[in-house]
Amino acid sequence: MVDDERWQRISANPPVDEGTAIPLPESGWGALIAWLAGPQWAGPLRRHDVPDVRTDVVSREGVVRYQCPRGPLDQESIDDDIAQFLAAADVPPPPRSTVWAVRGPGGLSAEAFWSRVYAAMEADCPEARLPRDTRICLERVLASILR
Image 1 (cartoon, rainbow, N blue to C red):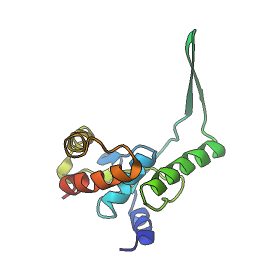
Image 2 (image 1 turned 90 degrees about the vertical axis):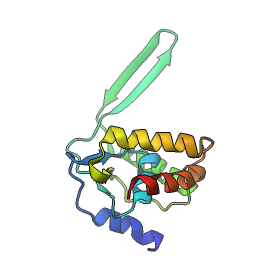
Image 3 (image 1 turned 90 degrees about the horizontal axis):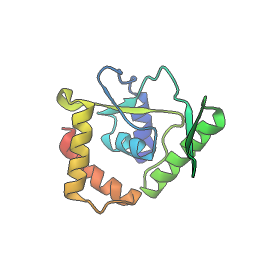
Image 4 (image 1 turned 135 degrees about the horizontal axis):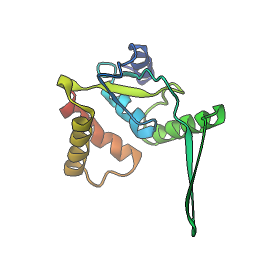
């Protein structure tokens, strides 16, 4: 499958049901997992609400948290960050404004899925920090989990 077609095929999947989905973070990391999992496992997540933008300002006096509704410029910034991370991992950019999810193999819970991902990455490639190294490691890790 050509890389350009991969996102199209993943996006064409019906939205993953929230009851059985393992939601992926709205980040380069989450999009990378969706891309590596591929159309057999990943799809868009049906999202009923868009989370607010949260900003923490740290000063000597403490932390002040501001929250406001996400606007178009916020979403553009998020999508740009995701595309930049994926470019550094040699992965094409995903469709913008999309949150991804994977179907848990064999009914694997979200907690069990993340536990296996993090444990396998720590065991197999604890030095993976850069996006490209993370992609190479995650390819092996996800291949062992998503069977």
